[in-house]
Image 1 (cartoon, rainbow, N blue to C red):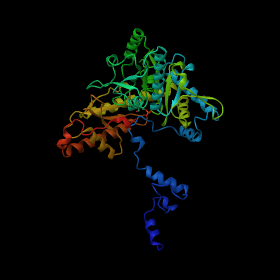
Image 2: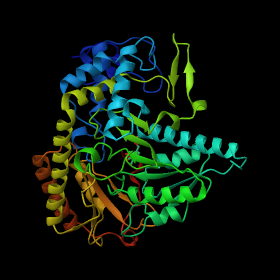
Image 3: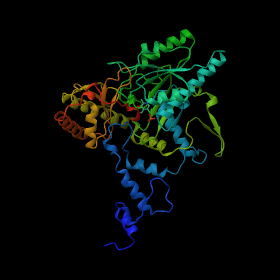
Image 4: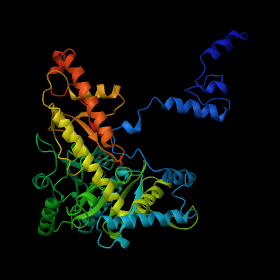
Length: 467
Ligand SMILES: Cc1ncc(COP(=O)(O)O)c(C=O)c1O
């Protein structure tokens, strides 16, 4: 029985699980503690708190890698103390980075991969910003040279893009010309581009696997149209391909579809290596068709880390490990390994889609041809919505986002599942059973209140926070 100071007794009663072996004082959540703490206590307290997070293996919302091999994790820890930007100190890491860029340029059919330019980034958002900035600068320099006004740059894309495109336009002061979605049309078409481009267009953005439905914009058609219109008008409007999600699927699942540097107007591509590159977050890549696509004024020559180093990035310091993880996967899996995994993921997505459709409650918005994504809408929303299903699944640990599509298709609400490497057939079976249980429960529950019934959606969210 406790017999000391009563104040201490109170503290002792509300100790931390496990950590009370080493620690008996509360730790502030608002101020840096005055005193040091036992490392085991510090670890255990944080570890326990993180148990409140969702389970990454059940996170069907995110495209981002949630499993890697132990050897990769070992490499990651070994490189944890190396700052990627210290290239003079860690030259071999930089050499490996350059190899990764060359391999990826080759994968995306750059005309001369060993001469292609690119950089590893924190993710696709940074990669897209870097690519579009280069295109803005090239457009501006050309206009300057021609003695023309360069105060009104615009960028053309569809409402099917990720929010980072809008971020770019907002942060870097470029007008957005957005082609809306319509019911039944969720991608960017040649017609959409035709209606929006002009002499001030810095680039047309196309998506290889959209965040919303996993579909692909008409990249080839838009390329043909731009070749023509550029020639006629003396313009030089490039295409930027957002391959954040589809970048590692296309070359292995549908290599015959031209959506990369094989198309003349494609001057830059971004890929999220932390998605189907199968690398832990955060790594993306920006690739340019050739070195001259990057304006010289944007490249910094940095000499204060010892030696001279050319740098084109938004971030400065960052982890080295992600580049090494990508290199590990390239060596470990090779093209054959990637092909096997990507085709398996696609098959699992088709299987899941079939099983979910067999339940009879859903309509499909995707065709699981281009991305292992199953986006479903409810046939009947009079009793419950996809948001209710999402909430029910969460109780079982599954993280499945429900959201409304962008304008003008925002009356449609969908439930989206991303099938990753660690989502096996077994997991599909368990998941489908849990959906069945959720539907049964919701059917038996009280119908929606009047105010909730008024729309297809019940509540509105966008998956912009989901990647
Ligand atoms: C099509 C698309 N573009 C860009 C992004 C942003 O990617 P990142 O999270 O790597 O910055 C995402 C994220 O899901 C995406 O799906």
